[in-house]
Length: 118
Length: 111
Image (cartoon, rainbow over all chains, first blue to last red):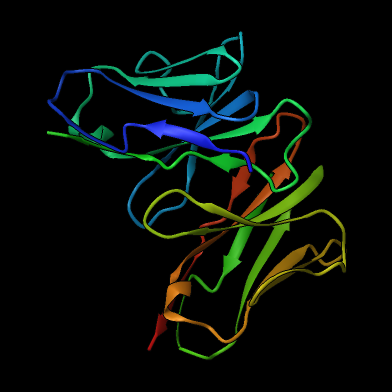
């Protein structure tokens, strides 16, 4: 089945630094990647949708200059949290669908990145 | 506005019990409804439903969709402690393929 590899699994960084999270589709071409954030005991919150080769579409209330998304190839999308602050601490998850109209078993998720900003 | 409502929000049962989780929705352009299980990490896919009345089954889990009444149920029979998780329902609607998520049902199965 389709696999999305997400790295790192967890990261602790100092306030003010930037953190890059990568998601790679291993056996399919991810034309669209969704980036989510999830706070404890809450549901997934969509942050942005990125399509390969074009600018990401951000959801209302998500700062595009703070959460930089790059989707330069069909197998790699990155989310960079710039100048991270403690309130950015959260669980970040990517999800991909392939370029063939969707996988028969839905959208594939990465394993998530737990970010802690101290 | 498209939305997904799951009930109950949490549930505690004993091993061997059968549970039914509900997902109701409102949508202007339905494409599919998906069920996911989330333990400590990212959600794992369970089912994708597109047609009414066709049950999908995987082991002790099954799900069905009613597009007339706008809901889906997820059944788990003979529950085990390993079924303890948050079960998320998501709606695929619209042309941009983004998913609309419910808040989830937190299931705890006690031995």
